[in-house]
Amino acid sequence: MYDFAAFAQPATWVSLLTLTLMEIVLGIDNIIFISILVARLPASQQARGRTIGLALALVFRVLLLLSISWVIGLRAALLTLPLPWLSEPWPVSGRDLILLAGGLFLMYKSTTEIHTKLQGEEEPGGSPAGPAPLAPGVVQKGRPWASSIMCW
Image (cartoon, rainbow, N blue to C red; front, side, top):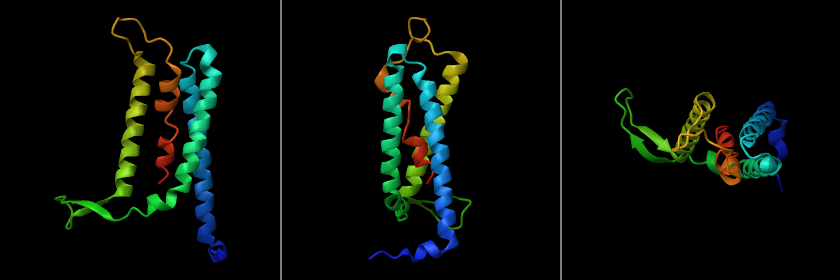
């Protein structure tokens, strides 16, 4: 029914080990990032925010792992870019677009978080930003799915 002959190949074990190590590192990244963001929540919502953030990170990580074969299969060119330094037009696939979007999102979020940490974000009234609300603090800023995307 299933062909397990691939598990006799050393390359399969190296790939499995690499994926496992990447998932561990990205999971630790999610824990650290969510912990930092949860610290902005009011004290009464921090435990709930941490639980929701880690649960979302787990769900998105599993969904992305289950869809990895689909994403890897997105190699067909959606468009081609005629770059002057290349002899042939560069084909852009769906996988390339997903990687680009994930990388840009991570750079944006990292930059805004560093800016907020160093400068202190101010509200229009001139007072420093107060505690963050639970939903945006965990879902949008917690980015449980973004670092998973980058492993492709």
